[in-house]
Length: 173
Image 1 (cartoon, rainbow, N blue to C red):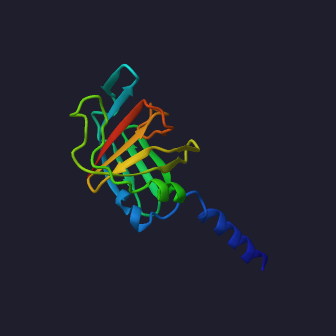
Image 2: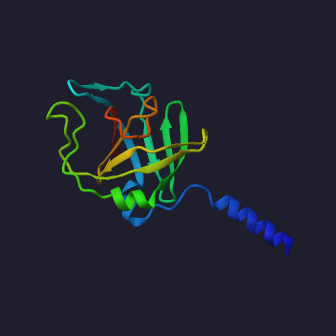
Image 3: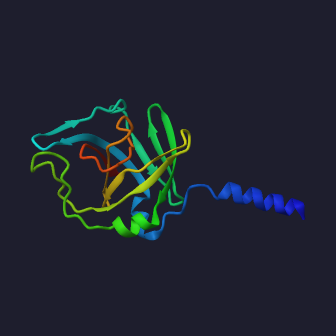
């Protein structure tokens, strides 16, 4: 009887980590995404500035693979980062699937997307460093745009509401 209790307890610990299966309404995230570019957008009361951010691995392909089981893998030339993804139910209900016609990511009128997106804010838990990253995400069937203003040296960062943003553009492979 004790062995059954220990096995049950061990199973509970192993399988109840910070991940969840990605539900059907959020399954648009599932798949392989190829990194395209990262843009810094800084807007003050009297100025606006946009710069393309140079990523070390720019000459190598950077991919983000998101699995249905809530795991994600960011592959760069320096290795692979493993994440667990969680979609906050309250944030998803209150924020997700706000239809946007276009997204303005720069100072000029041409710095606007041509297709429509929906928005949500998942949490990426980086297992190796035990940190949570919460970028805001615009997504449609072909593109994923993450924006953040914290952890800007990372490809995936967090967003806190600051007006300075880093937009990371991904294309479905």
